Image 1 (tube, rainbow, N blue to C red):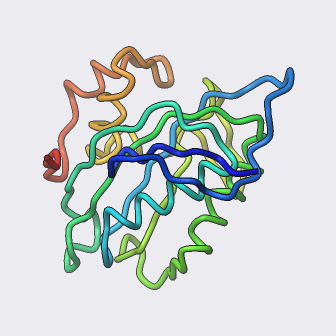
Image 2: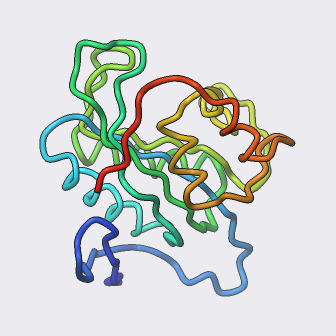
Length: 183
């Protein structure tokens, strides 16, 4: 099935060959994903990841792009980050397989913890669920301390409540890495 995907990064509609199934009565789950890159053509990396993701999830909203300083390992280029809101009929661990599949498809290689990467796709939220499995923790365990996650998340969902905390309150107490909205 060809899927028309409107890139938030470029004008126009791109056709991605996809496998997105019609919901046909399935219950759709609201998810938030964080995407980041600091290698190569970063906008093209994000656009490619969004295209690949759109094969399996329905993207509803996407944030602006944010340039952010690295967290942890500092001797690397700044990142380009964004957050998307989407719907999926996939259960959480299947969604994790999809996000990891996008990283593999784009040839992500993990060499250094918090090091350079062509793409990083993290599941931030899955409905209001709390999940603690060996391979997946939702909400994302460090998201509340990361400006590169919370700032774009607040942009697209300013009324969101995360683990009983209103996002406005989280933002009011947020400190951390430098972040600049890309124009």
